[in-house]
Length: 406
Image (cartoon, rainbow, N blue to C red; front, side, top):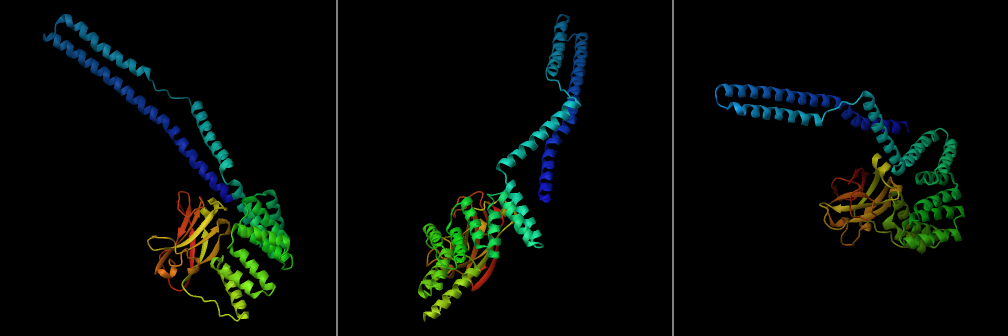
């Protein structure tokens, strides 16, 4: 947190410098303008004297009449007086030191105060403070896990709408086997950012294990809500397959797991589903599930800037494009920012159209985009990242960081 405030202080100093420098230069500029004005006045006086001398010479040489000399002399004097009057109408004033210093303090104070108020109203102070607090707690928790949990609970209690805090607390509870508390924390996330099939499935799974691996009424209610939002949600289908497996309904487990496989949420989930499918197929006397075609295991992460500035509720589209970007994506997966970092699978099973898949090309570029508008079309403000050109050949692992804002 100290580093954050040091950075903000340095930015404030830089902003103040842009305001102070023009004020400090004002006195020098004023002196230069006064000097230019005085020089012009001296030049006019010199020119006046020259014209008067020339008029006297013309009179002696008989080039002008004596009667006209007085009028011409008056005209020359009027020109000089008119120019002096113009200069006096716009005098340059040098303000007092007290006035300059007061103006300097008022301007800098107003700008910095306005920046602080704006940041408080529309900035991400609370989110940043919560993030730094969580990092500090994690470091402390490496030495004393009990202390970490207590402080994390206090932090979440003090910031009840902190999604990241509830997410971290849910993971800790689930790792400790505190399934009811873990489900409650997931419920808080749903309260804050709204229901999604993935979150409902996670909550249902925690309660499923808490209820001794049974599809109780509360678990089934969450499953029904998840399927209403997304009938093909892989987490929900995986849970239903698990429940069917527990009841030795091998064919039911196979159907659920094979339906979940195309949208497996990562390498581990993909492997777990394939292992389960292989098991039930063997029990049913069926041949193994055919595995073929190219496959990319893409680990998606956020840069520091993206992790701080991107909305955790925003949708992330991950897709493989043919080189040149023409046509529909060859494979696509949709995530949430809050799920990152995460490893997902892109294969022919994630194709949007069967005839337009990874196997149909030789080279691809994989992109990940945080869509602020919730649609795949890129627009200003989106964050994205992409790989170099990749050869489509067998199974590959790819690292992809979202680090550029459009």
